[in-house]
Length: 121
Image 1: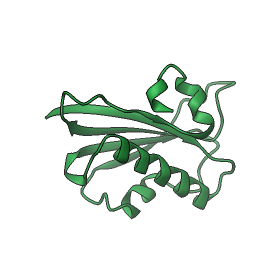
Image 2: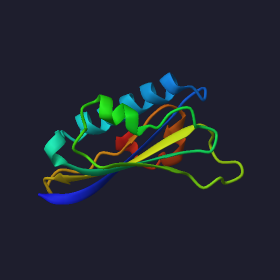
Image 3: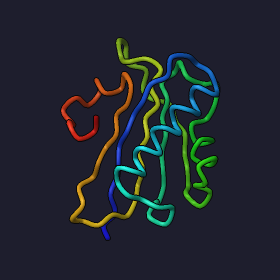
Image 4: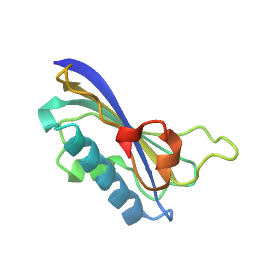
């Protein structure tokens, strides 16, 4: 097994706790499914949000999914003028078979952030 970092992002329409939790849940489920992970594979997870999202911590969605043994951290993105608004990003550190490709996940409007990753769409 090899330590990998999986990236992903999604957007929400409004700064609303349920919207943040729902979008984060969807993003994490896609990362887990596409990379065939289970809880024992996960080492840590870092979430960031743009400054316009503060209604809830994205990590709450991870805890609701049962990731209670995975260290989680929430932080702020750099506020770059003109950047895509209402974005939740994740970096999930996990152990994976080195022969399996990492499958990053970009959903909703966040697809524009990494259009170069065809497999992430």
